[in-house]
Amino acid sequence: MNFNFNSIAEQNYASSTGSYLRPYDIYTVNLTKIEKTELKGSKDPNAVYPIVALEFTGTGENKGVFTTNLFIPTSEQDMERPTYQNNEGHEYQRPSRFENFQFTLMQIVHAINPVGEEKIKANASKIKTIDQFIDLVVKALAGKSNVETKLKLVGRNSNGTVYAALPNACGLNKAGEVFPVNFIGDNLFFTNYELTQQKNYQNAKPTNMDKVENNPDEKGEEFDLDGLEL
Image (tube, helix red, strand yellow):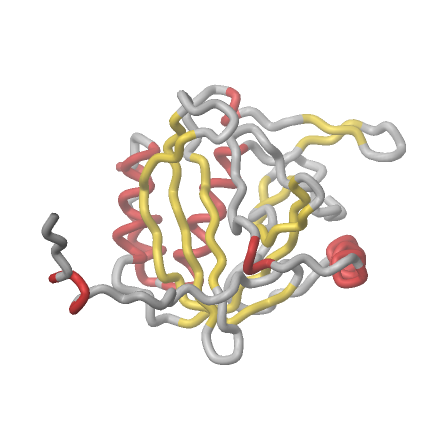
């Protein structure tokens, strides 16, 4: 049998992937990937979900990457605001998946390409589909991988392991009006609830983040509530 080793000259045999960025910290990063693609379900191998895949890479002393998948809203349920109960039994609403999806992407554009943000806003009346909106966002962020910005990561618990996650990008006030909650750009800080969760994470038994999956996303799983006073 003849073996072909011609690829040796071009192949990199050492992984260039660093460690993952950890939960509950604020990092200086570059947005190194944004892509509209699809994800196969881990629980249901026949399920395929349209997503926007994001990758942020830490700069300077913040060596590491953070990846996440934003599930693209596709159903009427994604447009509905879910209702929860607080500890006193009072009901309140959270922004819909669609609202959080829109605010997440637009916050990233605002932080990395504010000129592109204004162009998207100027053409808002022409956007008729979710794909058109995503295409405009991807276009605004193309070629901007050298732009540094700050990124706040919180955590979410999956099967006993806490993974880095993006905070919710928006909230609702008592009048039912949606407002942004900054997770990228300037003036980032942790809420009292997030500081408590940060302390719990730091005091927990360490997890080797180099040996776990960075992004165990699955359609239908909610992030932990961020404890904002709305």
